[in-house]
Length: 328
Picture 1 (cartoon, helix red, strand yellow):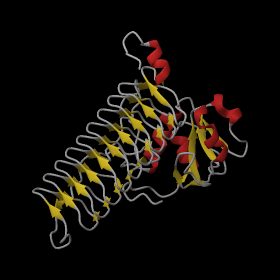
Picture 2 (cartoon, helix red, strand yellow):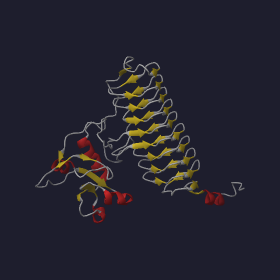
Picture 3 (cartoon, one colour):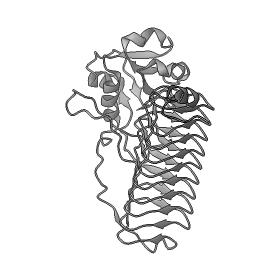
Picture 4 (cartoon, one colour):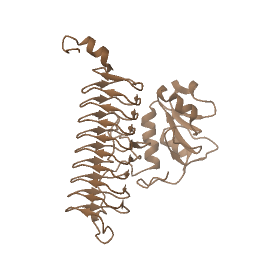
Protein backbone atom coordinates (compact mmCIF):
# COMPACT_ATOMS: atom_id res chain seq x y z
CA UNK A 1 0.00 0.00 0.00
CA UNK A 2 1.34 3.43 -0.94
CA UNK A 3 2.38 5.51 2.04
CA UNK A 4 0.80 8.96 1.58
CA UNK A 5 2.27 10.33 4.82
CA UNK A 6 6.00 10.00 4.14
CA UNK A 7 7.76 10.87 0.91
CA UNK A 8 9.99 8.06 -0.35
CA UNK A 9 12.97 8.47 -2.62
CA UNK A 10 13.04 6.60 -5.90
CA UNK A 11 14.60 3.13 -6.04
CA UNK A 12 18.08 3.10 -4.49
CA UNK A 13 21.15 1.26 -5.74
CA UNK A 14 22.30 -1.56 -3.48
CA UNK A 15 25.79 -0.07 -3.54
CA UNK A 16 24.43 3.15 -2.03
CA UNK A 17 22.87 1.08 0.75
CA UNK A 18 26.12 -0.79 1.31
CA UNK A 19 28.01 2.51 1.44
CA UNK A 20 25.53 3.81 4.02
CA UNK A 21 26.31 0.75 6.17
CA UNK A 22 30.08 0.99 5.73
CA UNK A 23 30.19 -2.14 3.54
CA UNK A 24 32.16 -2.87 0.38
CA UNK A 25 30.47 -2.27 -2.96
CA UNK A 26 29.62 -5.17 -5.27
CA UNK A 27 30.39 -5.38 -9.00
CA UNK A 28 26.88 -5.94 -10.31
CA UNK A 29 24.77 -3.35 -8.53
CA UNK A 30 20.96 -3.48 -8.64
CA UNK A 31 18.15 -1.29 -7.40
CA UNK A 32 16.12 -1.76 -4.21
CA UNK A 33 12.54 -0.49 -4.22
CA UNK A 34 11.92 -0.02 -0.50
CA UNK A 35 12.61 -1.21 3.05
CA UNK A 36 9.92 -3.18 4.88
CA UNK A 37 9.44 -5.73 7.65
CA UNK A 38 9.52 -9.42 6.79
CA UNK A 39 5.75 -9.82 6.53
CA UNK A 40 5.17 -6.86 4.22
CA UNK A 41 8.29 -6.89 2.05
CA UNK A 42 8.33 -7.82 -1.63
CA UNK A 43 10.96 -9.35 -3.88
CA UNK A 44 12.59 -5.98 -4.60
CA UNK A 45 12.59 -4.77 -0.99
CA UNK A 46 15.28 -5.07 1.65
CA UNK A 47 14.12 -6.40 5.03
CA UNK A 48 15.79 -7.38 8.30
CA UNK A 49 16.03 -10.25 10.79
CA UNK A 50 17.22 -9.53 14.33
CA UNK A 51 15.54 -12.09 16.60
CA UNK A 52 14.62 -15.78 16.57
CA UNK A 53 11.12 -14.69 17.61
CA UNK A 54 10.57 -13.92 13.93
CA UNK A 55 11.73 -17.28 12.60
CA UNK A 56 8.36 -18.06 11.02
CA UNK A 57 8.41 -14.68 9.27
CA UNK A 58 11.87 -15.19 7.76
CA UNK A 59 10.73 -18.54 6.36
CA UNK A 60 7.74 -16.98 4.63
CA UNK A 61 9.04 -13.57 3.59
CA UNK A 62 9.01 -12.54 -0.07
CA UNK A 63 12.13 -10.44 0.37
CA UNK A 64 15.28 -11.67 -1.34
CA UNK A 65 17.61 -9.50 0.77
CA UNK A 66 17.79 -9.05 4.55
CA UNK A 67 19.98 -7.11 6.95
CA UNK A 68 21.01 -9.43 9.76
CA UNK A 69 23.77 -10.50 12.13
CA UNK A 70 26.27 -13.28 11.46
CA UNK A 71 24.86 -15.36 14.34
CA UNK A 72 21.59 -15.77 12.39
CA UNK A 73 23.14 -16.56 9.01
CA UNK A 74 22.69 -20.34 9.26
CA UNK A 75 18.93 -20.17 10.02
CA UNK A 76 18.06 -17.84 7.16
CA UNK A 77 16.81 -19.63 4.01
CA UNK A 78 19.58 -20.01 1.44
CA UNK A 79 17.53 -18.28 -1.27
CA UNK A 80 17.78 -15.01 0.70
CA UNK A 81 20.88 -12.85 0.33
CA UNK A 82 22.21 -11.23 3.50
CA UNK A 83 23.93 -8.02 4.53
CA UNK A 84 25.80 -8.89 7.73
CA UNK A 85 26.14 -6.12 10.31
CA UNK A 86 26.96 -5.91 14.01
CA UNK A 87 23.88 -3.86 14.99
CA UNK A 88 20.84 -4.83 12.91
CA UNK A 89 18.35 -2.23 14.15
CA UNK A 90 20.83 0.62 13.91
CA UNK A 91 21.55 -0.41 10.32
CA UNK A 92 17.82 -0.58 9.57
CA UNK A 93 17.42 2.94 10.96
CA UNK A 94 20.16 4.22 8.64
CA UNK A 95 18.65 2.54 5.56
CA UNK A 96 15.14 3.71 6.43
CA UNK A 97 16.42 7.29 6.63
CA UNK A 98 18.03 6.78 3.23
CA UNK A 99 14.65 5.93 1.68
CA UNK A 100 12.61 8.37 3.81
CA UNK A 101 14.73 11.45 4.63
CA UNK A 102 11.80 13.24 6.30
CA UNK A 103 10.78 10.35 8.60
CA UNK A 104 12.49 11.84 11.64
CA UNK A 105 10.79 15.21 11.24
CA UNK A 106 7.81 15.16 13.60
CA UNK A 107 7.19 18.89 13.73
CA UNK A 108 3.74 20.35 13.12
CA UNK A 109 2.37 20.85 9.61
CA UNK A 110 2.93 24.43 8.53
CA UNK A 111 0.10 24.18 6.01
CA UNK A 112 -2.76 23.59 8.45
CA UNK A 113 -5.69 26.00 8.21
CA UNK A 114 -9.01 26.63 9.93
CA UNK A 115 -11.87 24.45 8.69
CA UNK A 116 -13.26 25.33 5.28
CA UNK A 117 -16.97 25.51 6.14
CA UNK A 118 -17.95 25.31 2.47
CA UNK A 119 -16.07 22.04 1.99
CA UNK A 120 -17.21 20.45 5.27
CA UNK A 121 -20.81 21.70 5.37
CA UNK A 122 -22.14 18.86 7.51
CA UNK A 123 -19.25 18.83 10.00
CA UNK A 124 -19.98 20.08 13.51
CA UNK A 125 -16.85 21.76 14.85
CA UNK A 126 -15.73 23.81 17.84
CA UNK A 127 -13.45 26.85 18.00
CA UNK A 128 -9.88 26.86 16.66
CA UNK A 129 -10.05 23.54 14.81
CA UNK A 130 -7.23 23.19 12.28
CA UNK A 131 -6.95 20.82 9.31
CA UNK A 132 -4.02 19.92 7.07
CA UNK A 133 -4.09 19.24 3.34
CA UNK A 134 -6.04 16.31 1.88
CA UNK A 135 -7.84 15.50 5.13
CA UNK A 136 -10.91 13.30 4.57
CA UNK A 137 -13.80 13.43 7.03
CA UNK A 138 -16.96 11.36 6.62
CA UNK A 139 -20.59 12.26 7.19
CA UNK A 140 -22.16 13.09 10.55
CA UNK A 141 -18.89 13.81 12.39
CA UNK A 142 -18.02 16.34 15.09
CA UNK A 143 -14.69 17.84 16.18
CA UNK A 144 -14.13 19.65 19.49
CA UNK A 145 -12.31 22.88 20.33
CA UNK A 146 -8.55 23.29 19.67
CA UNK A 147 -8.17 20.01 17.81
CA UNK A 148 -5.58 19.57 15.05
CA UNK A 149 -5.93 17.00 12.27
CA UNK A 150 -2.84 16.97 10.07
CA UNK A 151 -2.39 16.29 6.37
CA UNK A 152 -3.71 13.12 4.68
CA UNK A 153 -5.56 11.83 7.76
CA UNK A 154 -8.76 9.94 6.91
CA UNK A 155 -11.75 9.80 9.29
CA UNK A 156 -14.84 7.71 8.57
CA UNK A 157 -18.54 8.41 9.08
CA UNK A 158 -20.27 9.06 12.43
CA UNK A 159 -17.06 9.84 14.35
CA UNK A 160 -16.74 12.16 17.33
CA UNK A 161 -13.37 13.78 17.97
CA UNK A 162 -12.97 15.59 21.31
CA UNK A 163 -11.22 18.79 22.31
CA UNK A 164 -7.43 19.30 22.31
CA UNK A 165 -6.83 16.19 20.19
CA UNK A 166 -3.92 15.83 17.75
CA UNK A 167 -4.21 13.27 14.94
CA UNK A 168 -1.56 12.68 12.29
CA UNK A 169 -0.39 9.76 10.13
CA UNK A 170 -3.66 7.93 10.79
CA UNK A 171 -6.65 6.25 9.17
CA UNK A 172 -9.76 6.03 11.34
CA UNK A 173 -12.85 3.93 10.66
CA UNK A 174 -16.56 4.59 11.15
CA UNK A 175 -18.47 5.31 14.37
CA UNK A 176 -15.31 5.86 16.41
CA UNK A 177 -15.03 8.19 19.40
CA UNK A 178 -11.75 9.87 20.30
CA UNK A 179 -11.98 11.69 23.62
CA UNK A 180 -10.30 14.86 24.84
CA UNK A 181 -6.53 15.16 24.87
CA UNK A 182 -5.68 12.08 22.81
CA UNK A 183 -2.53 12.23 20.68
CA UNK A 184 -2.47 9.77 17.80
CA UNK A 185 0.19 9.11 15.18
CA UNK A 186 3.28 10.78 16.61
CA UNK A 187 6.65 9.02 16.34
CA UNK A 188 7.48 6.24 18.77
CA UNK A 189 10.14 6.17 21.47
CA UNK A 190 12.80 4.56 19.32
CA UNK A 191 16.44 5.46 19.83
CA UNK A 192 19.83 3.83 20.38
CA UNK A 193 21.37 4.39 23.83
CA UNK A 194 25.01 5.33 23.57
CA UNK A 195 24.77 6.20 19.88
CA UNK A 196 24.79 9.97 19.58
CA UNK A 197 21.93 11.62 17.70
CA UNK A 198 20.50 8.40 16.26
CA UNK A 199 16.74 7.94 16.53
CA UNK A 200 14.76 5.19 14.88
CA UNK A 201 12.65 6.61 12.01
CA UNK A 202 8.95 5.71 12.05
CA UNK A 203 7.29 5.50 8.63
CA UNK A 204 4.25 3.42 9.63
CA UNK A 205 0.83 4.80 10.49
CA UNK A 206 -1.97 4.24 12.99
CA UNK A 207 -5.03 2.32 11.76
CA UNK A 208 -8.12 2.47 13.98
CA UNK A 209 -11.11 0.31 13.09
CA UNK A 210 -14.87 0.81 13.33
CA UNK A 211 -16.84 1.26 16.57
CA UNK A 212 -13.72 2.04 18.62
CA UNK A 213 -13.41 4.35 21.62
CA UNK A 214 -10.12 6.05 22.46
CA UNK A 215 -10.13 7.48 26.00
CA UNK A 216 -8.94 10.84 27.30
CA UNK A 217 -5.20 11.51 27.08
CA UNK A 218 -4.41 8.29 25.26
CA UNK A 219 -1.14 8.29 23.31
CA UNK A 220 -0.92 5.98 20.30
CA UNK A 221 2.40 5.96 18.45
CA UNK A 222 2.59 5.26 14.75
CA UNK A 223 4.43 2.18 13.51
CA UNK A 224 8.10 2.03 12.61
CA UNK A 225 8.09 -0.09 9.43
CA UNK A 226 4.70 -1.73 9.96
CA UNK A 227 1.53 -0.10 11.35
CA UNK A 228 0.00 0.32 14.79
CA UNK A 229 -3.49 -1.19 14.65
CA UNK A 230 -6.57 -0.96 16.91
CA UNK A 231 -9.23 -3.48 15.89
CA UNK A 232 -12.98 -3.01 15.48
CA UNK A 233 -15.06 -2.69 18.64
CA UNK A 234 -12.12 -2.15 20.99
CA UNK A 235 -12.48 0.31 23.87
CA UNK A 236 -9.53 2.06 25.50
CA UNK A 237 -9.97 3.74 28.88
CA UNK A 238 -8.22 7.00 29.82
CA UNK A 239 -4.41 7.41 29.86
CA UNK A 240 -3.54 4.27 27.92
CA UNK A 241 -0.22 4.25 26.06
CA UNK A 242 0.26 2.18 22.91
CA UNK A 243 3.76 2.06 21.43
CA UNK A 244 4.84 1.60 17.81
CA UNK A 245 3.75 -1.49 15.86
CA UNK A 246 1.36 -2.73 18.56
CA UNK A 247 -1.58 -4.63 17.13
CA UNK A 248 -4.73 -4.91 19.27
CA UNK A 249 -7.49 -7.20 18.05
CA UNK A 250 -11.26 -6.82 17.95
CA UNK A 251 -13.62 -6.22 20.88
CA UNK A 252 -10.92 -5.72 23.52
CA UNK A 253 -11.34 -3.78 26.77
CA UNK A 254 -8.22 -1.94 27.95
CA UNK A 255 -8.66 -0.07 31.24
CA UNK A 256 -6.87 2.99 32.59
CA UNK A 257 -3.10 3.50 32.56
CA UNK A 258 -2.26 0.26 30.77
CA UNK A 259 1.02 0.47 28.83
CA UNK A 260 2.03 -1.54 25.76
CA UNK A 261 5.68 -1.72 24.70
CA UNK A 262 6.47 -1.86 20.99
CA UNK A 263 5.58 -4.64 18.55
CA UNK A 264 3.33 -6.65 20.85
CA UNK A 265 0.31 -8.42 19.36
CA UNK A 266 -2.96 -8.66 21.30
CA UNK A 267 -5.71 -11.06 20.23
CA UNK A 268 -9.49 -10.59 20.10
CA UNK A 269 -11.79 -10.24 23.12
CA UNK A 270 -8.92 -9.50 25.52
CA UNK A 271 -9.60 -7.69 28.83
CA UNK A 272 -6.72 -5.93 30.62
CA UNK A 273 -7.03 -4.41 34.10
CA UNK A 274 -5.74 -0.99 35.09
CA UNK A 275 -2.01 -0.19 35.27
CA UNK A 276 -0.94 -3.48 33.70
CA UNK A 277 2.22 -3.43 31.60
CA UNK A 278 2.83 -5.48 28.45
CA UNK A 279 6.47 -5.98 27.41
CA UNK A 280 7.54 -5.66 23.79
CA UNK A 281 7.45 -8.28 21.03
CA UNK A 282 4.94 -10.51 22.88
CA UNK A 283 1.88 -12.39 21.67
CA UNK A 284 -1.28 -12.36 23.77
CA UNK A 285 -3.90 -14.82 22.53
CA UNK A 286 -7.67 -14.47 22.15
CA UNK A 287 -10.03 -14.27 25.14
CA UNK A 288 -7.22 -13.55 27.63
CA UNK A 289 -7.92 -11.72 30.90
CA UNK A 290 -5.04 -9.86 32.59
CA UNK A 291 -5.48 -8.58 36.14
CA UNK A 292 -4.83 -4.99 37.13
CA UNK A 293 -1.24 -4.08 37.98
CA UNK A 294 0.16 -7.17 36.26
CA UNK A 295 3.49 -7.26 34.46
CA UNK A 296 3.42 -9.43 31.34
CA UNK A 297 6.91 -10.51 30.25
CA UNK A 298 6.17 -13.62 28.15
CA UNK A 299 3.61 -14.82 25.61
CA UNK A 300 0.16 -15.75 26.94
CA UNK A 301 -1.89 -18.45 25.16
CA UNK A 302 -5.55 -17.97 24.30
CA UNK A 303 -8.24 -18.37 26.97
CA UNK A 304 -5.83 -17.70 29.86
CA UNK A 305 -6.52 -15.68 33.01
CA UNK A 306 -3.35 -14.18 34.51
CA UNK A 307 -2.32 -11.79 37.25
CA UNK A 308 0.73 -10.59 39.17
CA UNK A 309 4.35 -9.80 38.37
CA UNK A 310 5.50 -11.65 36.49
CA UNK A 311 2.00 -12.47 35.28
CA UNK A 312 0.94 -16.06 36.02
CA UNK A 313 -2.34 -17.95 36.14
CA UNK A 314 -4.79 -16.31 38.54
CA UNK A 315 -5.21 -19.61 40.40
CA UNK A 316 -1.46 -19.83 41.08
CA UNK A 317 -1.31 -16.16 41.98
CA UNK A 318 -4.06 -16.57 44.56
CA UNK A 319 -2.47 -19.68 46.04
CA UNK A 320 0.87 -17.92 46.45
CA UNK A 321 -0.81 -14.91 48.05
CA UNK A 322 -3.48 -16.69 50.10
CA UNK A 323 -2.38 -14.90 53.26
CA UNK A 324 -3.29 -11.60 51.62
CA UNK A 325 -6.28 -12.75 49.54
CA UNK A 326 -9.47 -14.31 50.89
CA UNK A 327 -10.29 -17.30 48.68
CA UNK A 328 -13.94 -18.19 48.18
